Length: 573
Image (cartoon, rainbow, N blue to C red; front, side):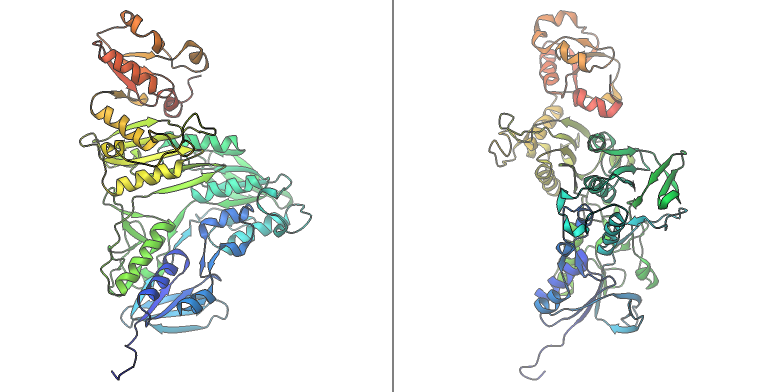
């Protein structure tokens, strides 16, 4: 090499932008100023906030331009990256190390060589072979043009005084129209919320027995009631088998059970499937779940081809099994790791534990780690669960809301396995704390001793995270033996609430002795039977259990009290 000349540059082609591809491109440039980086995206936008798409439909994000994280100019001028939009990769030759690229506007096909190739094709909305799925008025939600089409359809089928752009946020008011959303996952629920904000009558059809499949059913019930309170008609176990045209340009959505639901538009949020055809045709290994199989450095079965984002199969850190995770956070981290490895660094992806959150009508539902469903499917029995309902912040400070928490942990050593939360305030920061604890292998005893920030408007001196650890530690230490509504053994059911509370709701067959009378009425209780103690949330039942145990009775606290019973076995009244 002559003095002053640049070292030979490496050519890296990145297929797909958005979260994984764009983060890989930007990170690689920061690590290697000499690399020739070419990023191709078949759509018109190279980096956009796909998580914000439903909120643009509802007008919460008023301007389409707000969704665009970075455009071609930013990548070219700030990062010296060659960006080609409306350019689709149609074939890879690993032997020749080339990619065939097709201009989606002109149809022209060109061939580019590479030293390293990164695939970030994402995941496509599932489109089952239903009659009528391609009718006008049936939409999917994946790209900015998709939501633009939905907005234009709504505008064209309602009497607005001017264009949609004249409205911002919840100022948009529409005559009542009918929308059907198929699917109760992230996209389905967020689209349902935003169309309610637009004034549409919304019916949500969910094939399974509860929404938000990563959650356990009893925790999802809070979300379902919240949807109903905010005007969403929810139909569970509704398997759509046809969409058909109806009078005046409307539609009808038909289910296997014989329901016929009228609609002016239908949004499909059934789920997503990894886009693997490009990798499959190139001979790369595809996993059993349909994702591109990668190692912990994001390499595919070809050492010069990497893959990131929703198209890849990664290890679940909770189970060690392969999984699909279509979330922006892991995709960004994977893109960064791929760039590090390409640049010669020893970076590795730890896997994902499935931490996620959804906001709905001012509330939130979130989860991290293992669900009870997953534990049961794997045959795991070394676990226990608790339910608790702490305030989001100090109860004496205005605005406190109760949180519904479910915590899963090992019986053998107390290791934290999973957490789920639903509420109107403080859900995100509690699940974030649990998520970090799980990642570090913490136990419920560590939660007891966690030092977390406190002021009355933000939390309590005994944080919900501390509280969860303390309750779990009491269970493991024998201070609070527990039982569960769906597995109660034969015994006496003792309700320690006041009679006025039982008039509102009560379980059948209970004996009622209020907590403040319990010590004086111990003689009314049997010593030869196990006593299952309940109250509204579990706290008074715990106090009663301690009294009973120290007076020679066999007693257990029913986890979660009447609040958990409503979700586990239905409303008592």
